[in-house]
Amino acid sequence: MNLILLNNFCKRKGSIDICMPSALGLFISGFFLVVGVSVGAGYYFGKQQADIAEQQSYADVEQVLVADREALLEEKAQLQAHLDALSIRIGSLQAQMLRIDALGDRLVDVAQLDSDEFDFSQEPAIGGIASPESSSLEIQDLISDVNNFNQLIDDRTEKLDLLEELIATGKLYEEITPSGRPVIKGWLSSRFGKRIDPKTGKKNFHRGYDYAGKTGADVVAVASGLIIRSEYQKGFGNMIEIKHPDGYSTLYAHNKENLVSVGDMVKKGDKIALLGSTGRSTGPHVHFEVRRNGKYINPSKYVKR
Picture 1 (cartoon, rainbow, N blue to C red):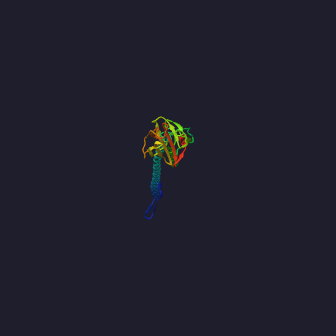
Picture 2 (cartoon, rainbow, N blue to C red):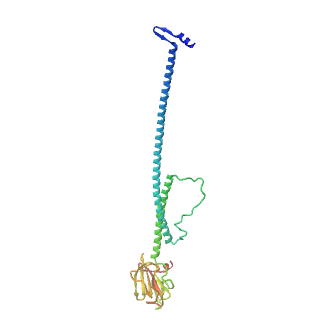
Picture 3 (cartoon, helix red, strand yellow):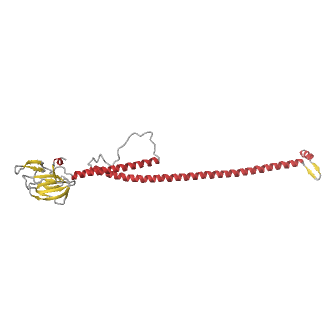
């Protein structure tokens, strides 16, 4: 039936047969073909663009990752440089702390302090309750603290050096300045000043202190110095003279025996003679004189030191 109806629409014109349904079919087929091709081409083009966009996106992400990696490497290098600098500072601080510890031990010994109380090998006792507001230090804060600590150590080291020098100077002054008695065992039998001479009964000036004791007892130097005389002298008997710095000299006379020679160096407290009664003497004793720049000085204040 359909074929009959279609044939009824066919007309003949000249030698060409035109069939309307066939032309319409061809047109529809061509339209769908064009649409299909367009759709396919669009899909292909769209997919290609999407692939390109995806590849570009991947490239952008990769570029960002590379940049981030380079930034991280640079930060790591900077951090390592800070750590290296910090390690060098800490090594320097450790060396300075060892020096301060050694200096502290010397000061404790020289100043005769309590070594248990001033023990530089032990960490100082500290304590307290932790604050809830505490936080970790940043690397820059840590470097700043180390630098400040380094300056404090330098300052304290200078002060300790000065203190050591002052203590040493004080000790040296004590060593070279006459002080104390010239005998370990004995008693004061005559003072400095005018007195009645035990030999003549007349008044004269006694230029030192006499310390009586047992024959052969130790006579000691009251200060460090150089022996400039060790001889027998009329009136003094066996006598010794010691030259000290700052113009001081001390004399020890009537000795039973001199134990030092000219040119000897003696320290404060060294035994230099044996107590005796040689020369112009009424019994075993040591005549002790203190002079400064050749002038006789009352030994009283030096003996009391």
